[in-house]
Image (cartoon, rainbow, N blue to C red; front, side, top):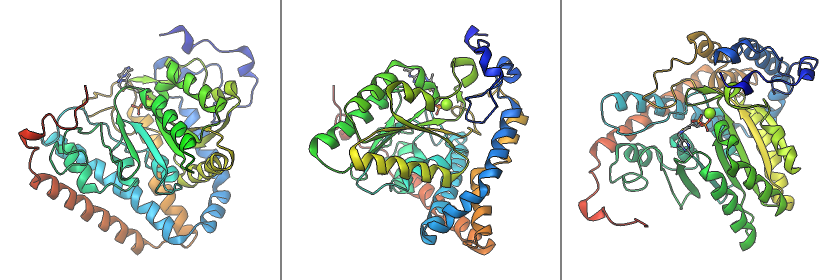
Length: 378
Ligand SMILES: Cc1ncc(C[n+]2csc(CCOP(=O)(O)OP(=O)(O)O)c2C)c(N)n1
Ligand SMILES: [Mg+2]
C-alpha cells in the first residue's frame, strides 16, 4: 500500500464531507483495500437527488429535439460498446479495446454543447466520442475490425479513431500525451484567430503526469480556449484514484494555475452540459481555459483483457443503480419530454444502427497491401 493513500491532512477530518472530495473523511477504509468507499457512492446519490430540481429546470430550458438526440447518442454508445465486447470475444476485433460503458453522459453532455467546427482530442477510450463528434457507427466499427472502410482505413484500430473532417483529432494511446497536443490545438486556434474551442479529454490517472501541469500552466498563461475534461472514472487500470493520488480533488488542482474549474457529476448529463456551456462561454469570450473534473464510473474492465480482481461486484452494482442513461430517461419522462414509446423507438433505432455498423464492418475488405506505407510518418 503506497503511503500517500493513508496520508491525510488532520483538518480533513473536521471538514463536512462532500462528494467532490474536498472533505473526504480521513479514515477511508475502501481506499485502504484498493476500492471505493461505499459511503462516497451514497453521498453522490444524495447530492444528485438534491440537485434534481435544477436538472429539471435545465431540461426545460433545452430544445426537446436536442434532448432526445442526446439520449439517442447515449443509448447508441451503450449498445455499440456492448456489441464491441461481443464481437471482440468472437475474435473479430484484435489488440486492445477500451469500452466507454458508464461514461456516456460525459461525452454526450460536453460534446453536444459544441459547434461542429470546434475541436476535440481524447485518449484510447474513443469509440463513442468519435460517434458523438459525427463519425458514422459504420466507420468506427470497421476501424475496430481493422478494415479498409474504417475512419482511418483500418490502420489505426480501437485506440486511434481520427477524422480531420469532423475536427476529431484522435484517439491517443500514451496516457496524458493528448493533453499537450490539445493545448497546442487551442494555441493554433488562437494564433489563426478562429473562434474554435478545443475539448481535451483525459483520464484521472493522467493527472499525475507532468504534461498535465505544464499544459494547464501554459493554457492559463497564454489564455488559450481549451477545456480540459478529466474523465474521472476512478480507476487507472487496476489502481483506484485513492491509491495513486495524494489529494482527492482534481478540479482544485487548477487553482494552482488560477484557472477556472468545476467538479461535475458525470452520471448527470445535464450537469455536464451546463458546466461545459459555462466553460465554452469563458473560452469564446476571452480565450480563458477551464478544467472540468467529471466523475463517473467505468462499469467494464480497463480493457477487454482485464480480470477485474481489484474491486467488488457490490461496488459496480451500487454505481449501476445510478446509471446515467436511466437517470436521464427518467428525468425526461418526468419533464414530459419523453414517453416509454419514444424511448422504445430510440432504443430500436440504436440497435438497428449498430446492426448496420457490424454488417458494414463484416463486409468491408481489409486494407490493400499497397496502403501499407501510405500515411506513415517516420
Ligand atoms: C505514458 C504511459 N504510461 C503508462 C501507460 C499504460 N497505461 C495505459 S492505460 C493506463 C491507465 C490510465 O488511466 P486513466 O488515465 O484514468 O484513463 P482510463 O483508462 O481510466 O480511461 C496506463 C497506466 C501508457 N499507455 N502510457
Ligand atoms: Mg481512469
